[in-house]
Image 1 (cartoon, rainbow, N blue to C red):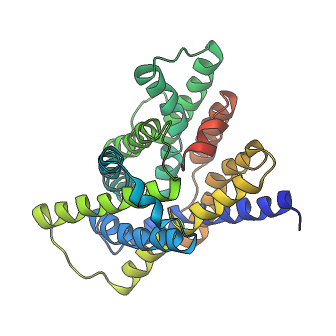
Image 2: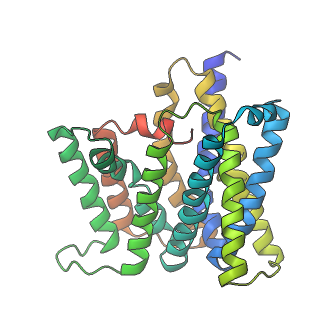
Length: 298
């Protein structure tokens, strides 16, 4: 099997796994509260990422980190996993999984807006038009097609889903020009994230043992949301002749996710979700969002 074919195999495997996580979120949240899910899934991710570093003999890279590198991971860890997943899971608890995952997928467009604010980037008219297409998609999903009334089906859930997209965009910008190994960086981010979420639970919530179903869900999310799948995607990018060759496959993920949501969660897929998601993806692709998608994980 040549390298490019192997790259496709890794990329398709990653896309398939990522397409299942929205269903896993929703099913696990039926038996757990959002903060509990963040807590246990984050610890699973730490274990997975630690195993990756050991297996690839890259753990020693952490010895060369400066204090600023560590502080940076503390800040990143507060944003992701702690704040990002806490808000995202609360959105999933309030909204149908199909709407939460579609609204969260708006993050590349939010990234463009954040780049205008934080990086002082100039945005072409083409990008503005593309963003308008995506935001129309958001309105279609949030109002379930009743755009003229402008009545959101669940305002809090919609705001949380969009807020998670904003947090991810800020997190991505913070990772720009980071010279640290991406797996090592993500590992340290999750280590600090575990500290933050544990502190929050101890001070403001309570720790309780999850049910077998909840524990299984957290294991799945920890493994396949930011664990094994992250490694598969990195391998695909490394083996591919060009990153554009495989990065476009990521746009299949939200649509495949709708299929999994329908058959595993049992949700009837609203026509407004399909139309809105198509508009969001079309807007992202129109303003060349591929460059954000393929870099987002590092």
